[in-house]
Amino acid sequence: MAKSDSHQELTSTLHLGLRSVVGNSPADHLADFLATASAEEREIVEKTINGDGKSAMIFIHRGAQKGARFSIAESNATVGRSSESVIFLDDVTVSRKHAVFTKSDNGYIFSDSGSLNGSYVNNELVSEKVLVSGDEIQIGKFHLIFISAMSN
Picture 1 (cartoon, rainbow, N blue to C red):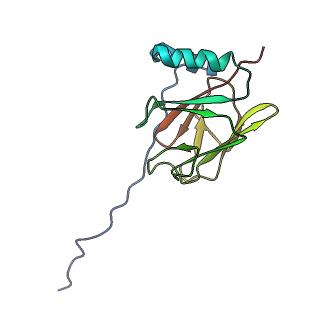
Picture 2: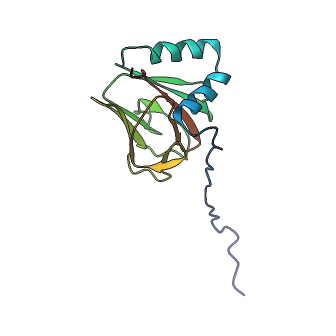
């Protein structure tokens, strides 16, 4: 009688789930974030929004690193599970080289780098998107809010 293989490898699919939509616009996402933000976070957001546009901020508002914030001042800020990333997101749902924020004359562009789980901006799967302040970006289990100077 053949011996059964009791050590079979189990596989499963990972469902990241999209966040329920709070509103229809980045302004709604930003208002929702500010409603739950600390006084210190609100102050930082106001300084960034009223700033000179030379840098932007990313706030993690859902996920393991909730509350973490990153300044994007360089022209190409990488995002990924690699410790060499400017924005290091330590979770298996994030690719080592997941995405990049690129500063251009027209603002900031978010580009997925061919990641396994993809990237979402405002609950839409994207490969590249010009960002506006208040855009919500989902990378793996992390939900990020993009904050930049508002154009007048």
